[in-house]
Image 1 (cartoon, helix red, strand yellow):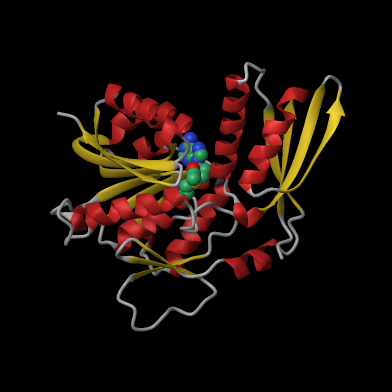
Image 2 (image 1 turned 135 degrees about the horizontal axis):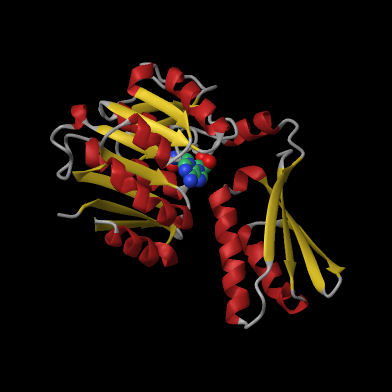
Length: 303
Ligand SMILES: C[S@@+](CC[C@H](N)C(=O)[O-])C[C@H]1O[C@@H](n2cnc3c(N)ncnc32)[C@H](O)[C@@H]1O
């Protein structure tokens, strides 16, 4: 049993209540209740924390807004917070098992023994409260894209994997940075606006025996990268679509004429607006991979 729950609160017009209940039920929420708040309704619902990442909650909020717009009603306000943090770590640890991703990776929780006779790249991880266990479709899509980019046996792989310098924007647990380094990249510059993510990336880097100079981690975003490095060969960025769109113009400062990039955290219905923002800023979309309701854009710098 988990001890930490998301409490999701939705303030809405009364006529939206039914469609919200339906959405929450489909989302896996347990215990849905509503109360009158003036002329509005406040719907409260609960979900074990391990069942939803922040990205999923953001997607839920978007669907609720879209439902309201389709019905011609004013959009609801969705908020979420974690309640009852006690025993979170131990309860969550019971739910997280080693996981194979793509053809090359095995994500192994830090507290489990490293499997013997396994020919996969073992990525050891203790994300703590940071995002990035490998369970989420967007992280998987990014790792698989990195695999295609950096595994020398892959047809689209870079011929100079061992000299590739990569930026990881929104590094979370550091899973993508460490994945790129295990695949043979020379160096990764990882940034995240959340100081807990920065701490988690540094700890996971040590856990995987990565030399500190190969994974440089800082709190912040693209503006910090521009101070750290002149140009990078590749970029991975798994954040929400809106954030990606706002960061794309600044990314030109760290892009070289042949830089490639992997973007995820994008709902399928948002892919068009992200692709447009990328193309406006000198990127060419090469492929779109999808898993569940999420997609991942593989792009390269335009000529
Ligand atoms: C979806 S998680 C991705 C974690 C990990 N890279 C993965 O793929 O599993 C997004 C991360 O981006 C960070 N973030 C959000 N906005 C950001 C921004 N503007 N610049 C840098 N990081 C940001 C969040 O703190 C969070 O750790």
